[in-house]
Length: 120
Length: 110
Image (cartoon, rainbow over all chains, first blue to last red; front, side):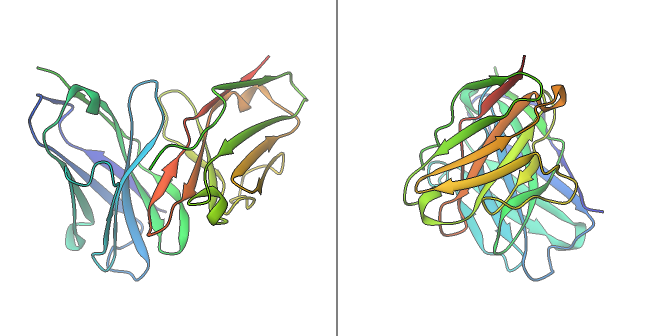
């Protein structure tokens, strides 16, 4: 059974760096073809894909946010870490991590999400 | 990458059918047969309902179907039920492992 769960701060100040962790079970990021991505959703607004990391450490970033995002994995801990720099109130959103497989272009398993508010 | 265009809202009565459109470009929807659809209830994570344009994951009723023509994909829900009332998002592969979502459609069951 595949599960994912996001963790991290729920409140950050403008200009700060956000660090979120996705802890998962039921699969390994050392298995060929496996990937984990991040998707966010501002309150009352649409989903937005942010970034993806594959088992081989290949990383893909949203073109609009690539300068602010970094993704990394810790295979031994079954974790993926997202950092987003220079946070702004418009970055207030629920952040989801999700499972994806290489060549399978959809998100089959999602975490419950974590609401991050950016406010001074 | 611009978001895919979906109607803000659609509605139908129980038992009726509704179709939600999702319009992109030749760089995403029109360029690949990799459109997926997600159902989302308030306060909940999205749930995969359709993948690869028209495939249903195990457990998704066959009342839901997907199709694509050119740069526009569609999700049709037939035999509407009150439990279908939710937000629906399309998502397309956009090359280079990148994905783009639609703006979302609120389905109201009258």
